[in-house]
Length: 96
Image 1 (cartoon, rainbow, N blue to C red):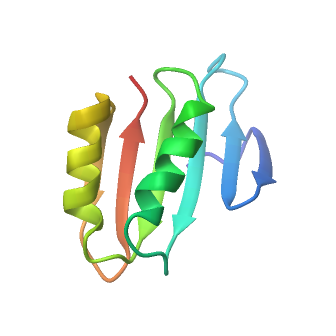
Image 2: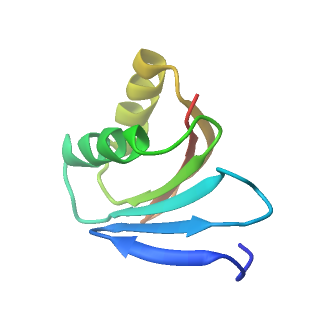
């Protein structure tokens, strides 16, 4: 991720705004250590505050995170752009 742009914290969220991308916001949400349903609850809360086309990167350790995220995406219409398995799972969600 480029190091330019404004970065600020709001609770567990890290926001980055890039001047070249008007309105585009990239958010990072740390859900490590949280169990179902909290990662999905926090994603839902975070995504409400961003514009369509903005992206949210989420890191989680909950074993149910992948199927929960897939179900949430189908229900809400937001897109899971990428998903990486591992001890810490990483997903990038785009608000539609």
